[in-house]
Image (cartoon, rainbow, N blue to C red):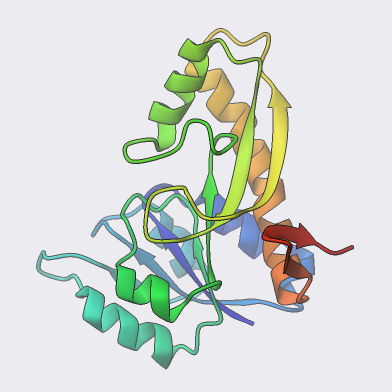
Length: 201
């Protein structure tokens, strides 16, 4: 299965995908995209000789129409948003319906939506005095964080003293959950049953 990974930050989830021994047998990361020209995650991709592209209006960037062509050129079966901060254009969401997943650093449907990314999410969780947080992986639709939830994993945050502590705990969970969901997708074990997403054993 060919996947494209979209990133905006350091690329720790990209690294988790590439480190997964189970995924190596089934999945190839064919290309990495970012909304930034100088994205730290590109260094991770380059270490594995994976092509990288920046998307946007600046010099050195590709347009979203060029993005569609590249996704077809690399024969992408699944798009993975791993800390990508921009909304995916509706045309690509339609063309890849059921083939785009996103990892979100909180337990959706709480703490999602526009502007809820990175430390912003963890600050909101911290200030709510929630005792549990975690990571969610969901299918992507045409708005932020509203697609069907595929999988979630919780962490206890009842003893934390800062949003940064929450971020650290949630990131560990993300690195476990994302490769697991990609594996199940590659095995054809993610199904829609009675309008819910079910992961078969």
